[in-house]
Structures are given as structure tokens and as C-alpha cells.
Length: 47
Image (cartoon, rainbow, N blue to C red; front, top):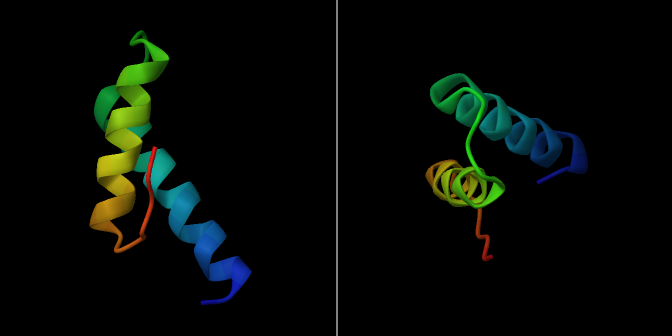
């Protein structure tokens, strides 16, 4: 996977999390949501 494709996937996941969750939560909540979203995008990540 090229860097551009990977970057687009990560940014897309971040937008999805923000659009679904909105604002006002603790950073830890967004972190957990982001991990779930990245896994759904078939990216191998860990906290």
C-alpha cells in the first residue's frame, strides 16, 4: 500500500469517527473509536 492510500484511509477513519461521535468526549473515547474504525478499514493497529 502506498503512503498516499494509507494516509487517505487513516484520515477517512478520523472523519468517520468525528461525524459519528461529534465533539465533547474525552480523548480516550475517541482513541477507542479510532482503533475500531481502523480495524474496520483492514489496518493492523494497536494502542
